[in-house]
Length: 299
Image 1 (tube, rainbow, N blue to C red):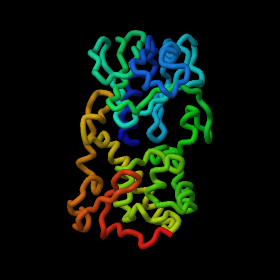
Image 2: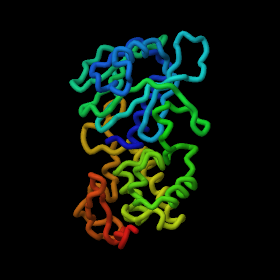
Image 3: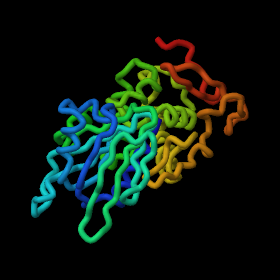
Image 4: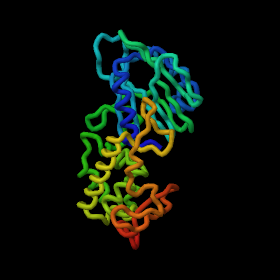
């Protein structure tokens, strides 16, 4: 599943190519791609036509295109957005006009711009867990976000991210610290891969209760999450197969730099102990038995 760095790579790629373009025509080919939009796929396609893309934004794993009326002479505050969630296998790909569509194309739009050739934006999703949703904008903590994203906390790459506030929130909760790292209302954008990587760097086992960790250790953990995601972003994200690509169809390479995730049976790069894999919330957790000892009790 794409995580925060992968979604940010897509956001940056889209922003580079589609800002100021007008949606000339949109088509939803698979109703699952618009299943969260109650008026239906045809209504979504009709509503998108004629809207201008003024910004491409992100919070956590949520991506959105801020839209305004292209007939307006001046750019005002965007009142609505096309929210995009990539799900497990979603891709937002840019193509020249008339490009051959892949078999997993779920929705697409023709984007025009005065003085430039039109391009096609394809939403490709093999497993159909991703979606598009038209939604009004609202203000949360002084920032305009789409209403469906209002409950999502700021992520570690957000310029206004408040590490101290997150540490305070973690310290107040009695849940396992990895479970809280994956809670998008506490800190957004941290998925299973980067949670394991951050926990390894901070020498913390994911089952440790957050309230029993010291504030300095929690700060170290948050800083580790920031560092690992910034490094992944610099390398284009993490790719294990062909499902994650950027807008040009290129894969990320951070998987070559993972210290613990997916390395069961291999030596810890810090102490040499064999990396273990454990079940956690219907997924796998990877850790070093020496660097990250299990808690004796979760009480």
